[in-house]
Length: 193
Image 1 (tube, rainbow, N blue to C red):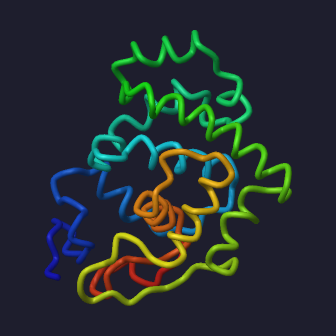
Image 2: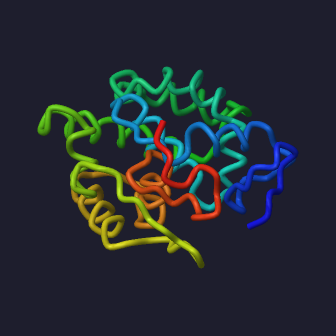
Image 3: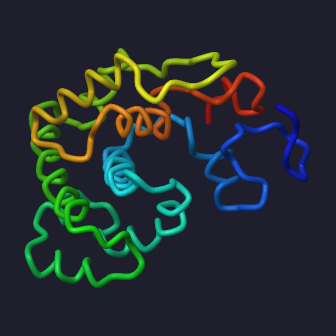
């Protein structure tokens, strides 16, 4: 991979040089281990919203999602009712898809149940990678799913989560640093923050 940005740094091919928000996401967030339950819920909600769309679409609507979904407080979102769904369906700042909105609410409820069972969502979700980040060294194509994302998807679905297919779970794992999938040639590969 050749440097594609004005700063001369080589980045993963998916980080466009002409989008500063996306570049900042790549450089400062993607692949950085997340242990905070509220941030984990944020990524779970956003990855579900992204299904079938580009991550760029969701990234550019992220602040709107923060506002619309109680700053990603799962306790608040779990209490959303019909009026909230109607409000969200009229909100042009988010993806107005009824199934995704309703799944965010039911996922918040399932999230809280997992938290109650395990003490933290962090403890539960990180168990799929043995509690520590898995550092990959991809040179070719990065897979869309792995055994770990398959297992996570299956268990989340069993617990009542929706929009948590294996591909979404793997994207969640990448975003939250459960796996480090920065390409070997990327300046962020193997670096922790």
